[in-house]
Amino acid sequence: MDLTDETVADALEVQVVDGGVRLSGFDGASTLLTRSAAAETARRLLHAAGEQEETATYQKPLG
Image 1 (cartoon, rainbow, N blue to C red):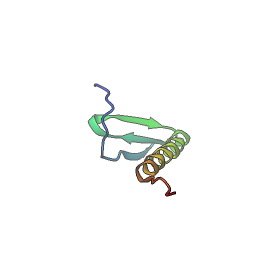
Image 2 (image 1 turned 180 degrees about the horizontal axis):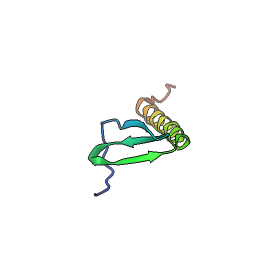
Image 3 (image 1 turned 60 degrees about the vertical axis):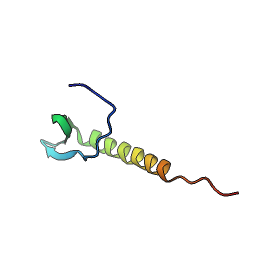
Image 4 (image 1 turned 90 degrees about the vertical axis):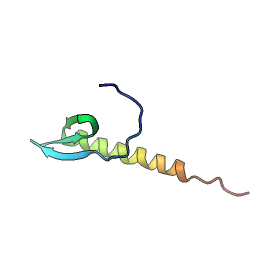
């Protein structure tokens, strides 16, 4: 499997498995996280997505 920086438009699948959280995505990629690791990952994703959104919608103030 080759790792690339290609942007993927599809969201990951999320399942609860044996007390952990499995993230599954494109090309069969999958990982099983503890609940606390999944919660921290979710926090980081929301933060990064928010930064991206702010960058995309930033408008320089007039004046």
